[in-house]
Image 1: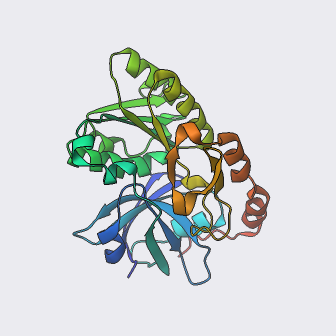
Image 2: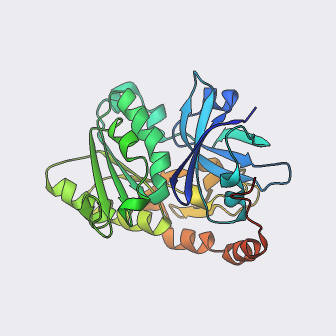
Length: 285
């Protein structure tokens, strides 16, 4: 159980794994996440579900090497098995529960920044399978950091790529790309934004200016993943919410992004200390 069936390095620091987890796969929906432990002494790591296959009984996770625990996960190979894969956790994306007649009236724009492209993929895939028009913007600093490009082409109507340095697609940020797409005549009933917190803040501001309702995913705030630690507390519409049990998706217009960014940085000192004493397993036999 929880054996790694496929592993691929999407970039030098971003790894995709397909993991055997039949019960998780059978219940998974776009927007949800997992708790993963590499071994019995490993840290509990929340990871968004990047794809799932109910027939094969597999889920796909994408891990970016940031700290010691993510490095441990990436060091695992095909044939290795996780000690635990718990889920699906969190609430599914809002459109999953939408009435068919309302869903038929929608046109979605999904905006992905960096590794946030991975959880955008199952959303685009679900919408396409249900006949909902969906366009996608993928943004990254440079061409070498783009992920899921070919996969995304197969599950959306229009794919727009932008890079900060212009090495691929449109030169500029996702906000610039969104403004251009709308200026070119595209219109949307809803945007979903997943990426770094600062990117979601400014993309939400752009959506507001363009009159597009925006949903954001606050999965990057999660630590424990069950609501017990309180690390994912965020103010939404003036009320305290817990991203892991009441989200991870919320109305972007209502999120206090400045508070969320302060909370996101509260464990940086601990992470730095752990990294300093961590012995990396990558490349070892």
